[in-house]
Image (cartoon, rainbow, N blue to C red):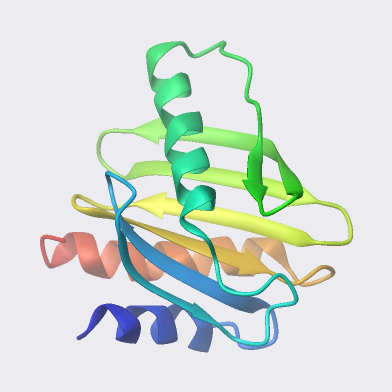
Length: 140
């Protein structure tokens, strides 16, 4: 499957909620991004670089203050960062009226999804997690 195919797979699992998906290397390099009528436009690499920075801070110091992630001029507040050797790392962010961001790492990449305001965050997190699990099972 192509990197764009993984974007489509994530979005296709929750069409009514997920409106932007990006796959990036663990160094922040862009593999693929797709916007599905996202009001914020296509996901910029600054989003994933901010998320990776938040994950690194959490890994180095569990009590570190999180500074949030910028999508253009919009700042999403970091709600949580979890670090697990077995399952990778996760990031949860939110900005009232602009929706939520969820990210999860695999062995070689990070999937980032944006959710429309008012849609079910738990559903997005679960569906991104399923695609990440598939990728981990296939050594990605």
